[in-house]
Length: 127
Image 1 (tube, rainbow, N blue to C red):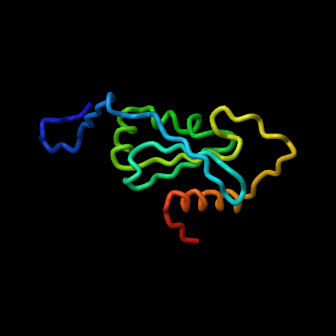
Image 2: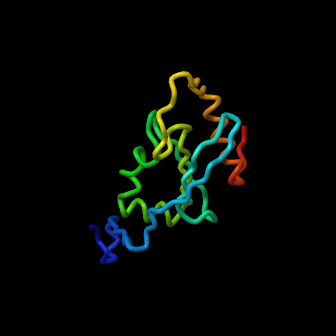
């Protein structure tokens, strides 16, 4: 994969112990000003937070699995961060379809949800 001879050529290699990568996360239900949502946490909660929010109509698995199931990337991310995947209401794994009469949240509502999640886990949010 890279030059591990120490020649200083600028290329390097990454050693990954795939056996030690944990893809099992902890699920939390967090009440926000706009309702309850699911947050999946991967990694050591004492490490700096990396917050993700999926694209429209996706959840954390459908949006980020390509990135996180790459062993090299997962190893580097989980070594350095605790990943908090915020799943919007109705987008969590196994969620029922959202009824058509439920109002679509505004961008401000979505931002408030992220702020509420950060507050729930003890992170400050500067507004």
